[in-house]
Image (cartoon, rainbow, N blue to C red; front, side, top):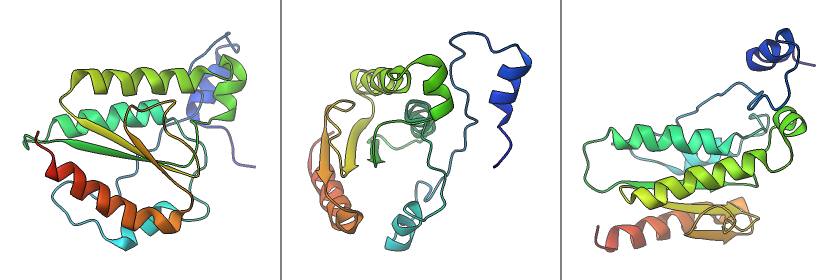
Length: 160
C-alpha cells in the first residue's frame, strides 16, 4: 500500500478535524498543450491502466479554465472527458458522499455562467447532465476519437 499523500498526512497531524475538505493531493496531467496537435496516441494515453483512479474533477476543471483564460485566442473551448462522477474515497468518507459532486457542479456552473469559455463534456459510459449543461454520452472508449473530432467540428462551425 502506498503511503498517504501530503494532504491526508497534514489532516492526520492536525488531529483529524471534521469536514476537512479535499484529502487527496492533486496531480494535473497535460496530454496536449494549446497550439499542438492532439493525436490518437494522446487520447489512448488517457485511458492507460494504472493511471490514478481518484478524480478531483471540480479542482481539475477550475485549473483547466484558469489555464485556458490565460490564452490569447478569442474562442476558448474546454472539453471534459469523464468516466464517472468525481471520486476520492478519503475525501468522501470524511466530508460526505456529495462533497465532490457538489463542488464539480458549482465550478462547472461558474464557468458556464461566465460565458467566456465554451464548456462541453463527453461521458464515457455515463451521462454528463448532472454536472454539465452540454454533453454527449458514449458507451465505450472506442468511440472517443470519432466523437471528439465530430464535436470539435460542430463547435468550430458555431459562431463565438
